[in-house]
Image (cartoon, rainbow, N blue to C red):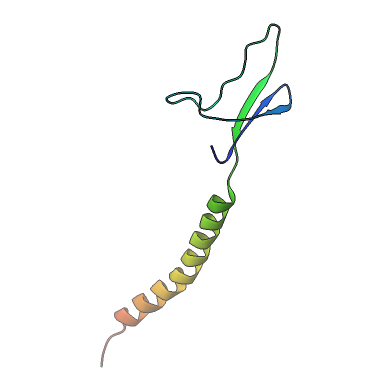
Amino acid sequence: YKGWSAYLDGKSLKIFKAGPGMMLMFPESSGDYNVEVKFEKTDYVTLSEGLTSVSMIISLPAAIYVDSRSRRVKA
């Protein structure tokens, strides 16, 4: 499961498919413990967001230019 991290009392856990709809399984132990599961962006997601931002920055001035040209009154 790309992007997911799991920790048991601060120690990294290996994430694997444990069944339908389940991505994590670890043995039960007696006592109190802290389980932390979090999702962090993968390199692919970060790259995709960057490309989207660049595309929008380039497209906005182009759209404004085309719109301004179409509003000009032809003499």
